[in-house]
Length: 318
Image 1 (cartoon, rainbow, N blue to C red):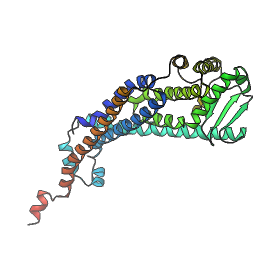
Image 2: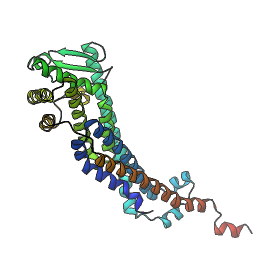
Image 3: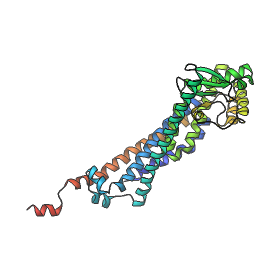
């Protein structure tokens, strides 16, 4: 098994390093789509690579060999992967599946809690629900989507900034930012090397909503002011409850950096960065295909050996 099987790990590490740069330098919508697609490919490729490495060790077990119809002895003698690497890979597969399951279950529970909360408040999908509870304005992606806001919070904002904030929340729902975040969270859970990708996607989706609101209002400074006021006020609110972990809010991560971005000109497309990221993804896919071919070349002879008669059997048959 050649070095190609390890290339997806390198690609994930590179993606983790460049993700914050892409989130800051590219238009937010482009950055989000590119990061999520790259994260999905890199995570799937890394999981495949870890699985192949783990199978070189687990495949030597008689029970597994019987299921796979190959010779455990032949597989062990021909293995190009040290047992310690195979053991680490087995641990990695179990950990990846466990982390992914935890994220999926946690997100499902939060969505169910959010759905129950919105049902108690009433209203239809996409509707603004004003509550007396002191919470920052949030977009809740369940039941057609809801925008929740407190009377006190909205009253503290000038009319233009209030409109900008609500446009920001609506953009989260319309552009399905919760889906991008879920995919990035799952990819990061399966592949820990992508931890910074998860953070970058959270930032880029917030910036995406910022830019949508700025385009609708026609004044970037107004949106910046709304974010600054909302962020300052939200800092003093109590910790989030379970359902709020799936909510998307203007007072999200890196408010100061986002305000600065809004006070600067809108970001432009940077083809070099986009092409670089696409090239990394393409190399990852190519490496995964080579790793798959290597595994077939490795397991093929062991499978043939399992089906061939042993020397003792041949002698006894004469």
